[in-house]
Structures are given as C-alpha cells and as structure tokens.
Length: 224
Length: 196
View (tube, rainbow over the protein chains, first blue to last red):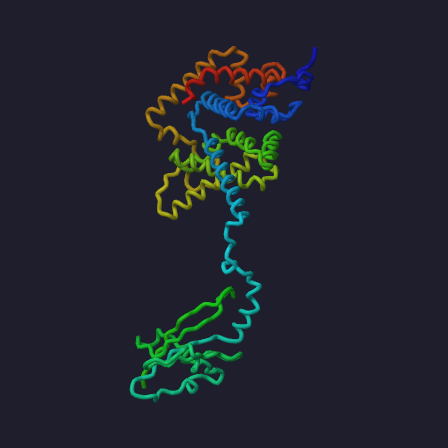
C-alpha cells in the first residue's frame, strides 16, 4: 500500500486545459509534470475569461464577500490594443515620405554646444541698451561717456538700428571684460519716484547658461 | 518570495508581446486589485478606473519586473501608488475625496475592509448580487460531499492542495480534480445569471 507521499510524488499525468486553469487560479501549477501555461493558454480567451470570472464569484460567495461582477480585463485589453495601434500608426507615419521632417529649428541643441559661446558672451559682455531721454530745452545732460565708468564702451550711438527720435537717444553700452555696469545702469527703480529718466534693457545669460534672456531695468534720475 | 512559476512564465510571455498572457494575469488579479484600491476610494467607479489604470501601468512597466518578488506583490505596489497619486492629484485640485482609509497610517494592514461596493450599489444591482450569491450557495450545497469539502477547504480555509490531500486522505491530483469539477458544476449553474 503506497503512502500519501508516494501517491503525491506521482501526480495524475493527464490534466485538461480547464483543470490546469483551475489549478493556476489556486497557484497550484508549480509541481505539474508538464507546464500549466501551455495547457490553459490553449483555452479560448472568452472561455477562460468566463471561467475565471466564475471562480472569483464562487470564492467570494463562500467567503461572504461582496460579489463584484465587473470585468476590468476587457477594458484593459482594449486600451492596450489601442495604445499598440497608435504606436504602430506613429511608427508608420514617421517612416512615410509624405511626413515632413521635424523642423531642425526646433531641435533642442545640446547644452554643451552652447556652453562655449554662452560662457564667452557672459564673461565678455553684458550688453545694455539704454534709451537716454534728452530733457527738453537743451543738452545740458552729461554725456553718456561722462556718466559711465572707464570700463564702459559707448558703442552703438551711431548704430543704424538705434535711431534717435524726438527727445530720445538710443545708446548701446558694452561692458568690457573685467568691468562692471555703470552706476546709472544699476540703480534700482524702486528707490526713485516713478519718473523714469532712463530706461535700460539688458541681455544676460540665464542662470543655467541655456539661453540669453532679456531683462528690463528702469533707471530713475532725480533732477538736480 | 519569488513569483509563482506559472505567473513568472506568463509574465515572460507578456514581456515578449503575448497579450493573452497578460490578459490572464489581469483576470486572475483584477478583483484583488479592485478590493485593494477600494480601500483608498469609496466610489466604486473611481476604484474601477484606478484598478484599470494600475494594470495599464503594470503592462507598460513589465520590462522592469525581474521576478525577484511575487508578481502580485509588484502589482500591489503599482496599484497602491496609482491610488495614492490619484488622491494627491485630487487634493491639489481641491476635490473633496472621501477615503476609506484610516488616519494617515501608511500600513496597508491598517486599512478597513472595503464596504464601498455595497454602499453605492443600486437596488437592482443589490438584488442581482443577492440572487447570484443565493444561486452559488444552492449549487455548492447540491455538490457531492467530496467535491464540496475540497472546494470549501480551498476557498474558505485557504488550504493548499497538499494540505487538503492530507485532510481528505487522497492524492494531490485528486484534490485538484475535485476542486475543478466542483467549480465547473457551479459555473454551469450560474452561467445564465452572468450572461448579461
């Protein structure tokens, strides 16, 4: 007479696909002579879905749990199929000769490609474009050169892109290496009454050196 | 704990593109995931959407699963994170979210059992559910004793096939066969109620 252990050492060799599915539901497929997966994958999807749904309900009913007849698997399957179709469509579109190439101007350049140029710009220059409002009645205002420091080079007073208009003289100022912005360009507008005498636009490198950013400062003079 | 070998095999096949393998994993674990996310949200529709989202995320992350833990453990973490992220997003948007959870305890074991499904079911749904439960119990009562015993020991007591074989003094293969035949018999009886 064989012992229980000996009986269990020789499991029933034949097992239907449906029985394999039931054993898998209980996590009892590990010790089968043949892989369970191959057996129950042979079951039609609809039949497998119905059986597993029933197994879930039977267990819930026995344990006095709420019976949930909803089926997520259909929705998940549909959505994954949709994702796959969209991915295939996109892949096909990118291979199509009728699809425009991605505009190179939008290609984000590696920061390394910019680093040298930005570093040189940052070190070499902070370009200030000052719009100097000439007071009515005369030019008794000090020249820009007098107002600026020794390290400021007045460069664009004759620039064609900066033309004087009534009462306004545009001036471009470049800070030389080792220099600093003149005091009149560093004054904070918050300390002056709202009567801007000089409006200054700056271009400077952004903190992460990724691009050049414009910034605006309002410079106010107290009339003497 | 490593993944059960058959689940591991299914995951491998799903990673290789066999969608059916993943469908079976969803079928097996969908109600466990639903019960889990139901501990975070009371609305059953929201729980349903969260569970669906968890499986979608799991599929997309299948390549990251190495089998070092059980598949359900890995899926469990995805479902919990999905639910928590959704709650956090709703909190930022100013939605008032009614939770099933206790007072901020991170331990899942501290969460109460989900009764949300009953709370929000319509009277018709409740009636259908009660009818289905009654039919299942009637079908189980009508089973031969050996089939009913094997099924009850498995579903209610959570015994393994080997343990049931010891209790019933029969081979494991016989236990497997009895449980399967019990389920098949009950399934045949409740099928008309499920074909809606």
